[in-house]
Amino acid sequence: MFKKILIANRGEIAVRVIRACRELGIKAAVIYSEVDRASLHVQLADEAYLVGPAAPRESYLNIDRIIEIARSCQAEAIHPGYGFLAENPDFSRRCEEEGIIFIGPNSRALKLVGDKIMARRTMEEAGIPIIPGMKGVGRDLDEYVKEARKLGYPVMIKASAGGGGKGMRIVYREEDLRPALEAGMREALAAFGDESVYLEKYIEEPRHVEFQVLADNYGHVIHLFERECSIQRRHQKIVEETPSQALTPELRQKMGETAKKVLQVAGYNNAGTVEFLLDKNNNFYFLEVNARLQVEHPVTELTTGIDLVHQQIKIAAGEKLAFKQEDLKQRGHAIEGRIYAEDPARGFLPSSGKILFLQEPRGPGIRVDSGIYAGWDVPIYYDPILAKLIVWGENREIACRRMLAALKDYVILGIATTIPFLREVIGHPEFLAGRTTTNFIQKYFAGWQETIREVDLRRLAQAAAAYLELNRKPVYKAEGISRTTRLSPWQTLGRWRIGGGD
Image (cartoon, rainbow, N blue to C red):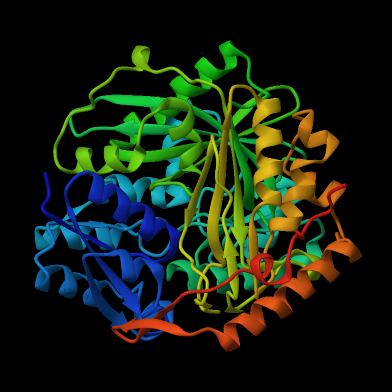
């Protein structure tokens, strides 16, 4: 087993990997940009190294600097988390050349599945159903126009070099194609360092169902069942759950075996997710492979009892998978809600600033994966995810009730977040009935606004928290980071709470 791992990421995923390292008795080193000097992952790590300025291309995407840090701190392996360099085959190959273990797929497999176009070609040749679309990147904008006419509108623009909704656009009319392509290319370049995009036929009102897969270095491949990820906005998942309400046992088995075949065809190792679209007639189509740990991995952990980060590290260290497909079972139901620093009442605009007060929900069946703390300044430079709220219940009804209760107890003051929006999504009758498709948010929550009562209470609480922030006394200061003792607005103002309760 490794003695030290360098975590080449930030935020809640870096914190998640740090905790896994501790549990396995491994030292965790991290990198941080200039604006992340006081971040939670820096405070929790055994070692922390400045990687560069705030801009991602000069810090978390800076391969040369990250390799330099790994060598200087004598890390045996690098965990890339998700986003940034997690699906970059050049980074994986560079680690291989430097004799550093990349905790993820090998560079050949990563190049294949990370290039969405190449992956589509390979899977089609292997007899795996794919969505109709381009077989390569267009040479110019005119070529994309011709391909869109062949496919028929609407079409989907997708980044070839990465996922997570970055660079994705739906286009319904030819006159909108060129500006959408240009915007998608800019976003893909900023997120992945590669502006390549391609077109797929857009399937309307599908379900987004993905399968978690593990493959060791000895040819053993298993799947850990599916996750339903249909609740999305701007092609970015915001609620995930397992098991999916759409799958019969027979369809689950068929899709799971197909997911395993995808990784076998690619010569893949470590953790990955095979994503499918499921149409109204229960036909499924290969979408892509996310060659990394997924944001939504906790729901799989809660229903299978398998720690996916532990498995990633063990596979990278050369261990064989300790279980077979027939050993795996799901128990209960799990739901995850992503907590973003975004204002859903203003079109999900990013929200930055100081977190004045933080109260995380606790109790049986509740898990919070977080990268924040009260007093921390949320920067504007990175993906706005702050934390993830995950709940488990014996069945879906209990899980939904538990999620709603936990969201009412989740308080972040000082910035706008998606917490009030998630409460209404989870409480919507169509969600509670399990009737979810990828247009759910567009269909039921277009122009959503927070209730006036809740806005007023939140503003009152923010004012109270701001007052406490101004009058708090420092307890100690270490490495330029102040830590303090704070009283909550509840302690100061008496018995009251935020929410649209009765």
